[in-house]
Image 1 (cartoon, helix red, strand yellow):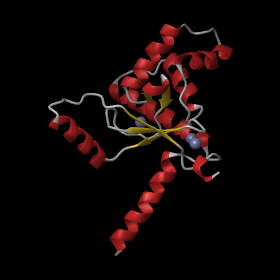
Image 2 (tube, rainbow, N blue to C red; image 1 turned 90 degrees about the vertical axis):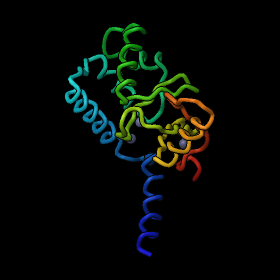
Image 3 (cartoon, rainbow, N blue to C red; image 1 turned 30 degrees about the vertical axis):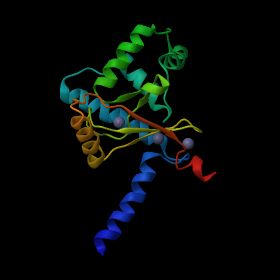
Image 4 (cartoon, rainbow, N blue to C red; image 1 turned 90 degrees about the horizontal axis):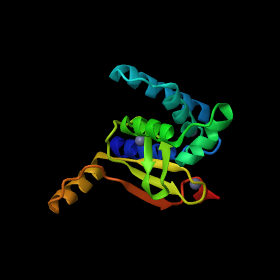
Length: 173
Ligand SMILES: [Zn+2]
Ligand SMILES: [Zn+2]
Ligand SMILES: [Zn+2]
């Protein structure tokens, strides 16, 4: 009895975390994610250079994905206009380390605020109304996808799953 109750409330809690409410404390989301990035760079002996930090900061401004040129526009007012190659290099570093994800279908990038290991299989849930991107993942889901791929004699390397729809907050209005 107790177990069924616990899993029910756990499910509701997860839905709230995947799509933070419109009025949530986003300053905290973004400070936390930056702190996680800083700590893991120190741990791995990597450098979060000023450019990498600025690009991550621009993406952390919201839960919406941004294209490389949108990032340039955001950074331009605070200093010299960065060259696209500089932005792409910073994005490559941030993606490789799991701080940022590439959303293939939008040709855009979104900051990861879920603190999961880089390379974890996640499904990106993209809201058609507000543009927010949520990350859903579960070990069962990863196993199912991997075993389906292996059954086809296929070795899965970088699975990208993107699902468009309406997020929990937009669905209510
Ligand atoms: Zn937030
Ligand atoms: Zn993520
Ligand atoms: Zn939405």
